[in-house]
Length: 296
Image 1 (cartoon, rainbow, N blue to C red):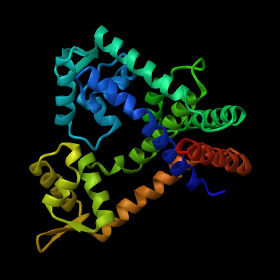
Image 2 (image 1 turned 60 degrees about the vertical axis):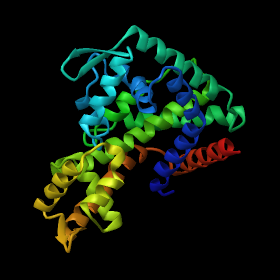
Image 3 (image 1 turned 30 degrees about the vertical axis):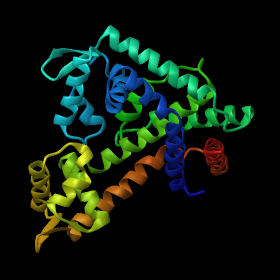
Image 4 (image 1 turned 135 degrees about the horizontal axis):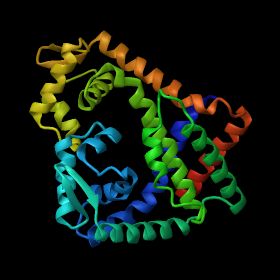
């Protein structure tokens, strides 16, 4: 089988599960008068222990967001009593935060426990197969390294939880390892996360203006000035060109982005090469059947 089929299937199945339990997160966020972003970050805070959570550490996990945006989120969580500042831009979870986290996860796990996408024997088989693949990723060399998947694994609630919770955990780990693979594919270029995402956008769209790029990436929290600076960064590398008020990707920029995509694929597929093709094909079939069962 083609190993390139695995990640899209894992991503689609993970998204399908998230669409079911996201309303529970939203309900809890409303209950505690915080935002969706804040409650999702709250679930990740314990994974950084013994280090405090900070904009800098969150930018390792997702380098495409503005540190200022993260700072605002964390300060809001501190004002809500969920975090406490321990140094400049550094926070730790409070007892209140832990209580909110436990209650939220309990409701999410209960929601997932009520799902049945596959017969019991197939569900157990799928969970076992996904764990084996995730374990193989955890043993990956550097590059790509395992920073993202390692932190997601720290969120593992353990084998005593419902099987659907376990499946969701392993799918989250397998998609996190894709982040490890992609981050390793471009980190050596020495550009910012914002600049890299702009390059990726233009790799698809081919051209745009500073204003259109900033609008397209509005969710990342960067100002128009920061976007202009990131564009200048790419122009200085020879990856973008300014033509008639438009910013366009250059041949060198396209080659850099394509090389990173190939490296991402290579890094991501490597841990799975030790598995028999027929076994991987069976796992892929189960993942797709699981997703269809969720949608039904």
